Amino acid sequence: MKITTYIFGALLCLVTTINTYAQDMTTAIGYMQAITDQQQYLMQKSWNYMHTAAHSFDIDKITKAQKELIRGVEKSLDKIKSMPDFGGDTNYRDATTDYFESTLMVFKKEYKEMIDLKEVTLTSYNALENYLELQDLANQKMDSYFDDFNSAHETFANQHGITLIDYHTELAQKIKKSVAVIGYRDQLHLDFFESYIAEINLIASLKHEDASLIQQNNKKLKNAIASGKKKLSNRKSYENDDQLIKTVQGIFDSYQKEAEEHIPVLVNYYEAKEKFAVSEKQMKETPKNKLTQKMVDQYNKAVKEINKASKNYNKTQKKLNDLRGSIVLAWNVISMQFLDTHIPEEDI
Image 1 (tube, rainbow, N blue to C red):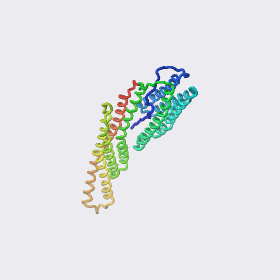
Image 2: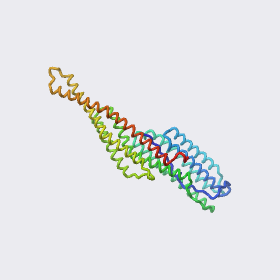
Image 3: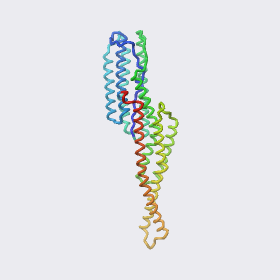
Image 4: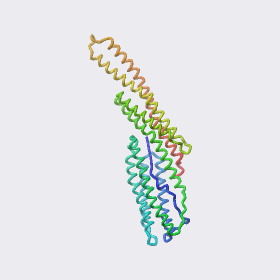
């Protein structure tokens, strides 16, 4: 099971522009435009990272894009630091420097922690929750950093009689849309992920051939399914696109079929196997002249039951393997189709 999530809170800000393309930093307008240019550069680098992550399950490729993002922030930061003061006033430049430095720390620290968690999220519900909580924390930090920067940005404009025009650029709209799309996908993923982990644990318990242990894990799976279905019932379609909701519902239906139909067959096999082992041992350890008809009948019954259970077991194992494979494939394929539909390749 794959999962990719991204942090971009403050980068969804309205891009403030000035009614000129002047680059003369001796003028207030030119000074602001120089900083705005670095905002735009940061946004483009951010979009490149998001787009790569949204359309790839290649962790190395995503990590490479992340490093390029960090280098982009560092490049912009160097340019901002090299800017002169404006008429002896350094507040605006310093606030911008603080904003880029703080953003850079998020990309380095929180991103590193998320990458460390990424592999674990494939097999741990708690790790996935921690991963998404870390993402939210990073977003909150970046929102706070941007608020401080934007205050200095507006103050500088007011001091120099500059009228700001706030609007969403096409790139800003793409980033905002991408965050919403990915966030929606992640919530649905979390809805069934507990069942996914419970099912992994259930399958792992089969190797112990302990009917009681298997039944305990099967109960946990049923509970996880019930909990997940309740969460899913509150989800709405994304822009009239309900393919992810239908896919997750189908996953729950498949898990439920496994828990209610397939697992009991396997449990029956292990119970029959245990009974046969006890009866067989009794037959071997009891002298022939002391064998009773009841013991012989019990053994013959155990043989018939294990033979029947064995045939059902083999058939069910194949069905179970096919079912489990289709569950993982369904989510990966539909999830990618959903991202491709709402964050299309041609938008890059």
